[in-house]
Length: 117
Image (tube, rainbow, N blue to C red):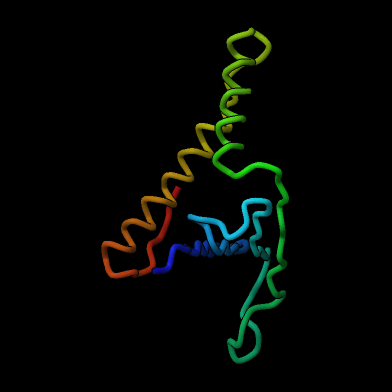
């Protein structure tokens, strides 16, 4: 049984790949690969430049960090120290579009799905 899910996003200005998206092998680090301004190499054998690996270290699992951040935002608003951050509505909508595309791809036999925002 494979409990991993890869997410690969390809765009006109770059792409990224996250392996082990659903259930991480290691909750202390979140690795991903990204590249900007890439193009096909000669004979279409890969892309140049090659994607770079990035590793984001953390002391807590992603789920705990999300709850912590949400609590921090709510406390700041409740205490009058902050206003709602508009970026989260945009980020959450884009995330939902990607998840919806993944579901659509699975339901249609794992075909590529274009995500438009």
